[in-house]
Image 1 (cartoon, one colour):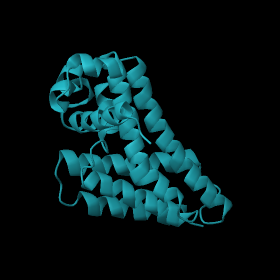
Image 2: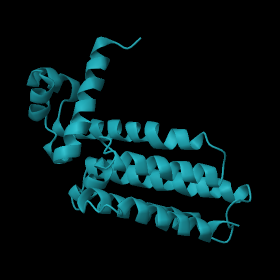
Image 3: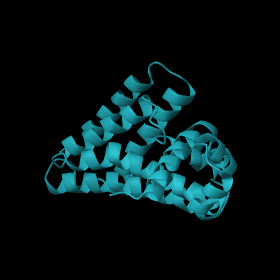
Length: 196
């Protein structure tokens, strides 16, 4: 059973993720979130204690949402191409549908690129962990004979990540109606290259 305080905190963090998706992580402040959540600043401060702690919790919530929507379901698929394709498909859907938090790490990577500190460290960790997931999905596919063993899994992860970043750029920023079809073509070419 979830305690009331924890339920309130989770509801506030869901709102923080949505707010950050619209105004950037720097726009997520205790004052702005208190107003949005219709809570007192002091009540919200009791949950997070600082803007930095709130931003870190917002990133953690966005990451958990992404993992629930994309990573965990993909890891339940058979190893090899089915797992990599499921990861790709779900990643595209979250970007296409604008799931709050789906591109928060992409936006935050630009927002905090030159700002050392705990928030930047968390953004970096989120990107590295996702790239590691892609590399591990590739490695398991190599083990099972689906993918080429002579390719560097980290390079493949880099390439998949590049395809997805191009999709977010084309779809979200440029509003290119062909962004998804171009992304699918790039991913299919990548699969053709890595298959045994």
